[in-house]
Amino acid sequence: MDAQIPTLAIVGHPNAGKSSVVATLTENDRIAIDKRAGTTTRSDQYPVEIDGKTVLRFVDTPGFQNPTDILEWFQQHPSDTDLARAFVEAHRHDHLYSHDCALMKPIAEGAGIILVVDGSKRIKEKDRTEMELLRLTGRPRMAIFNNLSANDKYIAAWQDALNKSFNSVRMFNAHRATYAERIALLNALKTIDQRWEPMLDETVRAFERDWERRIEQSVTSILKLLRKALTYKVVKIIKTNDLDSDQDREQIRQRLTEGLQEGLRTLEHEAQAEIREHFKHHVWNVSPSSLLVKDLFSNEVESRLGLNRHQTVLASAAAGAATGGALDLGIGGLSFGAGTLIGASIGGVLGVLGTSQLAKLDIKRTLGVERFTLGPVSNPRFPFILLDRSILYCARAMNWAHGRQAADENAPNRVPDQSAKVPRGFAEALDSEDHKTLAKFFAAARKGKDCPQEQRVREIIHGLLRDLSTDKIDSRADL
Ligand SMILES: Nc1nc2c(ncn2[C@@H]2O[C@H](COP(=O)(O)OP(=O)(O)O)[C@@H](O)[C@H]2O)c(=O)[nH]1
Ligand SMILES: [Mg+2]
Image 1 (cartoon, rainbow, N blue to C red):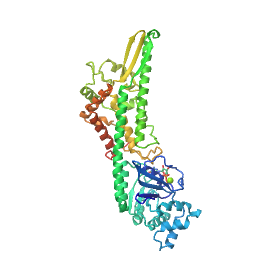
Image 2: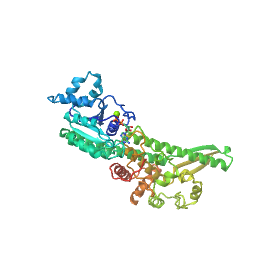
Image 3: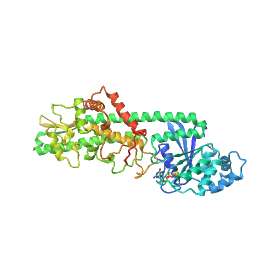
Image 4: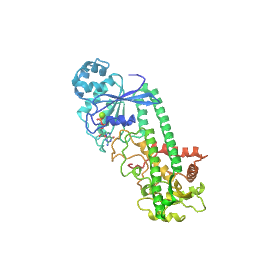
């Protein structure tokens, strides 16, 4: 093992959450986490790589089989300066101690120790035995509480016992830990072994740079989505002879609307896949009540995301997005232009975006055919809604711990509370100057043009994403 690379063996009881902790710390959601105890029977190495370089290594271990025997053996060999190594040497071929040797091997090779305890359980004699034998290895040691339930009446007893044997004792919840908490844990690791300080400092800096880069990549994915969505259109060409009535035309309009919506949903899914990739998520369980699983054109999404009416009117007007004199904003209830009321009456499950107010239908008649074109989207609220949902998606990707593989109802995410009485989208919380800048970008994107304010738009979205992942948010909701 390369002595330069800090290596930490994660030890603790079966089901204490060791594999979950490793999964969260290494952002690896492919690590096997199982409700059954004893899933891990070997010590598996999980390197943390940045730019193809291993900067840190965690070793997931099986948990002790015979801690009492090990402690006794340690106590019978007081003159050995390196007990972990001596124990493995003496027992490597003894199958009774195969798990113990698998666990002790990385420690024998110099790894530091992170003991994971479930602080919601009563402390037992076996726990004290394990703490003592880990102390006797003489390796740098940190203990973390990964409380599997809200019960905290045993914490003080644990803390007392752990403080005697460990250099550092911290809380770290494998299901809830955020980026900021992972960084905090890395910083704390420096204190348990000063030799690691330079390497860990570099690692923390590399993590921070990497996080900035991921946010930047996500901004790029979002802008690409907005550009594609705002130029997307659907076309149908039909021979005039085949068109009998206005009813046929209405049917075509409906089919085109469905086609436009389907195309936009696909574009959104493509951007979401990119965002998941930026944040290394392969497992993606979202609660069915989340706004993220609601249809993009549903009333719910429309009413909870995007700008409010007033802001939409101001932003669109400032961006010169309103055409033909009348502000046909299509924001239900406010009668700007005739189309609005018709759209609103169709309403129902679909918001106004689910109706003809999403985009304008253009019909051209030439040489015996009619060419129906729907799109691009002209509704000024739509891009704000799409932006908000993308940010919500990023919030979920950024703040969902990789060790939390199943949807865990008790572990809320660090995202703004979308179920709050007063709904507040991300865009809504920006100031009117930013709204105007965004509206200008959308207007340019709709025409397929570059926007002089693009850099500012990037900064606005970048700022929102950074704030969402650095503990500034305290109201939380389950996504
Ligand atoms: N609620 C909750 N469950 C957790 C947490 N960490 C682990 N678990 C669950 O506890 C069980 C055992 O976790 P695992 O990581 O496989 O433990 P290991 O045997 O120590 O590796 C799994 O069902 C996990 O989903 C946590 O922070 N909160
Ligand atoms: Mg495990």
